[in-house]
Image 1 (spheres, protein in one colour):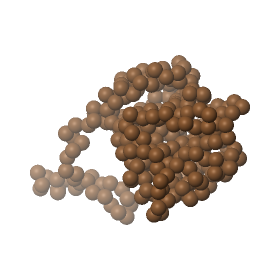
Image 2 (cartoon, rainbow, N blue to C red; image 1 turned 135 degrees about the horizontal axis):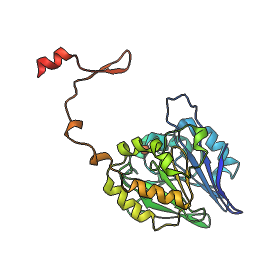
Image 3 (cartoon, rainbow, N blue to C red; image 1 turned 180 degrees about the vertical axis):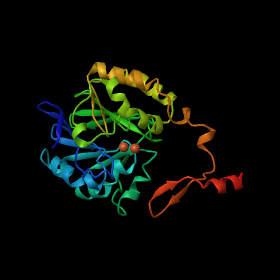
Image 4 (cartoon, protein in one colour; image 1 turned 45 degrees about the vertical axis):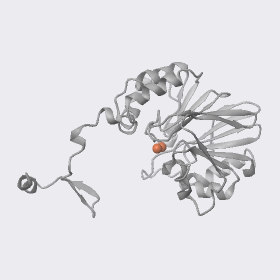
Amino acid sequence: MAIELYRDKTHACLMFTDLMEEDGQAVQCNQFLIVDHGTGAIIDPGGNLAFNELFMGMTRHFPPQKLSYVIASHADPDIIASLDRWMTSTKASLVISRVWERFAPHFTKVGKTEDRVIGVPDSGARLPLGQSELILLPAHFMHSEGNFHFYDPISRILFTGDLAVSMTSGAEARKPVVNVQAHIPRMDAFHRRYMVSNKILRLWTKMARQLDVQMLVPQHGAPIMGKRAVEDFYCWIENLECGIDVFNESNYQIPGAYIDPVTRQIRAAPQAAMTEAS
Ligand SMILES: [Fe+2]
Ligand SMILES: [Fe+2]
C-alpha cells in the first residue's frame, strides 16, 4: 500500500515502503511516485524485487506511457537495478548524474537506454514535471560520487536518497519521525560509515537551509517530518564526523583474518601464524 506524503487536486507524492520480502537479505527500501497534472516521475525505483508492485501502483494513477522520468539519485543496485524493466515497459527517460550516465546502461539489455538518458551536470538543474518542476540538488559524496537529492516545491518535500536513512522494517518506515534526538541511534552508524566527510555535510546543510522543507524523505527508513525536526536533523548532520574524518592508518593494514567459505564467517588469524610473521 502506498502512503500519500502529499496530495492536492493536481499533484501527489506517494511512497512505497514494503514492496519487497523482508527476509533480512535485502535492505528495506522506499520508492516514490510523483504525479503532476497526470504525468509522473518515479524516484529511485529500486531493484527487481520492487518492480512489479511499483509498476502496478503507478498504473492506478496514470497509464505507463505518461511516465516521463525514472529519476535516480545515484547508481546503486537498490536504486536502479530494475532499470531494464522500466526501459522496456515505459517510454520514460532515465535522469541520472553525468558521472553515472555511461555506467547505467550496464543494467539493461543493449540499446534500451539509447537516446533516453538525461545526464545531470554536477551543478544540478530544474526538471519540468507536468506543470511544475523538480529541483535536482547537488548531493555528491552523500554517499555516491555523483549524487542528487530532489526537491518538490509543491509538497515542499526534499527526497534525500541515502541521507537521513534509518535501518527499519517497511512497517516502521511508514511512521514519520518528529523526534530526531530519539531517532539518531537508528541513523548514526550508517551515516558515519557511508557519508564521505563532514565538509560535505556542512556544505549540503548550508544549501538545504535555503529551501522551505516540510519533510525529509530518505530511500531507507522513515521520513523526518516538520520544520522543527528538519532543523534538528540539519544540526545533527552538520556536526557529524564521518567517512574519511574517522578513517586512519589502522583501517589500512594488510589483513590477517581469513574467510571460511563454508560458514561464510570471518575468522581471526591464528595466533601462531601471526607471531611467526611478526
Ligand atoms: Fe546508495
Ligand atoms: Fe540506498
